[in-house]
Amino acid sequence: MPLDGVSFSCPDWADKLRQGRTPIPDLPLDDVLADAAVDLFNLLRVPDIPGQPTMAEAGGDWIRDIVRAAFGSVDAKTGKRFVGEILNLIPKKNSKTTNAAALGLVAMMMNRRPNIDGVIIGPTQEVAEKCFAQAAGMIAADPYLTKRFKVIEHKKTILDLHKDEDTGVRMNAKLKIKSFDPKVVTGSIPAFAIIDELHLMAEMNHAARVIGQIRGGMITNDESLLIIITTQSEIPPAGVFKAELQYARGVRDGTITAGVRMLPILYEFPVEMQSSEDKAWRDPKVWPMVLPNLGRSVTLDRLVADYQGAVSKGIEEEIRWASQHLNIEIGMGLHANRWPGANYWIACGDRKFTFDDLIDQSEVCVAGVDGGGLDDLFALAAIGRHRITKKWLHWAHCWAFDDVLKQRQDIAPRLRDFEKDGDLTICENVNDDVTGACDRIDQLEAAGLLPIDSPAIALDSHGIAELLDELEARGYADDRLISIGQGWKLQQAVLTLPRRLKDRKFIHGSTGLMTWNVGNAKTELKGSNYIVTKQVAGSAKIDALMATFNAAMLMFGNPEGVGPSVYETRGIRRV
Image (cartoon, rainbow, N blue to C red; front, side, top):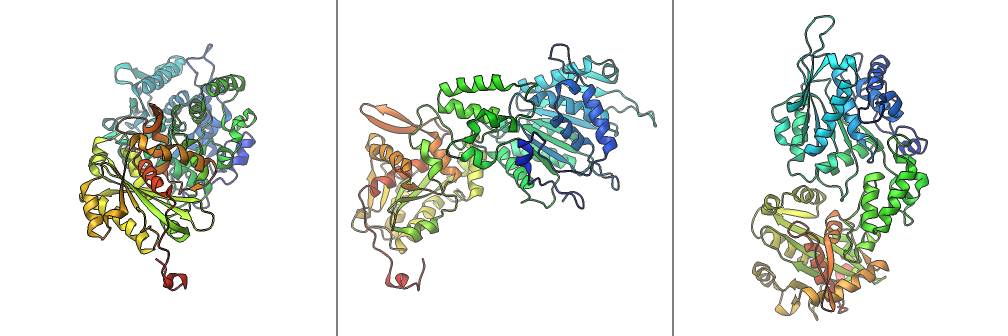
């Protein structure tokens, strides 16, 4: 915990959101410092609103609660700041960039150390320039601030000319507003940093390194402060954004307590409201829960009209709109020509389902493989038939070499996430992928689940020779392997699996890897047949889904397994 007797967990966060309160726990703040910071914040003027109202008039109480926590969290005994970080997840149109600029100026005015550096980092040059314009405009709108700060336009820097009242030393503190780049923070030791729209940085391969450098530079300063303000992602969360959000939720829910310095302030619906069958979040009556600036920078009537326009454009635009305006977390990409099975994929997932469960519950299993080169994924999918319900049970895994991380840097953070989840293996040696897949196939064989009177392993027609050699070396006869034609020849799987998913006769492990693959798939009509291809060439992988199609083609043949040995039926041995 950050301080004896202090916890950042907020178990009643959902109730607070329903009541229109800020979702943070009570904290032992220094009221003098907290009130001083709020007073400074309230005096700032919003430069791009007619009449340039003060933040006291234009800002909501929720942002003042953030100001209080940020600048009133100094321990009177040690002088250390116990709220060292804040992660604020908040929808669009709630004045994120304006608030970031205001927080930067308040940090400068509350600072008592000379020659410190502060940074505000935007995801793009456009956002950074907008934030700088807001900060410069706030300074220009106030005579006192105009005298205190020097705005250096070409360097996007604000210099504090104020002199300490006791020592007479000029502060010379600098606030730099930059776009996201490793060069921004390399070698710097910021006393405070504000990161705007972290979700837009998540797909950048160097994002985790940049934030790590910021945190590393702050270690030497007990008063350092990092504030992250972001909207939910338009795509399934990945990389550093996913990691930071999961950590913040863990702190909020009380599952993470050791060494915590982050105060999570998350405006999002409870999981049951996002994942329920009737999609409770679609009711505008509940929207105020996640819209703290409602009635100021955003109105309900405007949002409803905007939402109806998104709905009229289809599910893809509706979900994208909801992610940005209501912080709904997207489970998979939903595009206009998506594979129909994507509509029902998430509903058929069971996060507890594992490879061991596949073995324990199946009466027969078949395997499908989709091979890949050094810059691609190698995928194995296994489909089992439940011995009682006859539902199809699914498991998949992928292997990749570091080549794909280098050549597909746009998806490298996402692949690293899958590796952490245990659903993807980064290979060191050339044949690690083949060996890993064959080891899993051997487990199915040892359990007596692979059929022997019909093909058991389906390979794509361009399967790699090393896999065939390895299977032969392990004793798999040619008649147990089959080459599956691709394209239109997979139409039975492409069209039938969505029906099984809709009827909940296809259960899977709800892994991020498969969800991503399914979301990347699109259907195309070639002549009179539908085929599945990638939504985006190169980076949108669908290898695990193609391996699944290959396995499904075998399961359509209603194969029979060998069955467990006499020792297994007596409970003596479990494979």
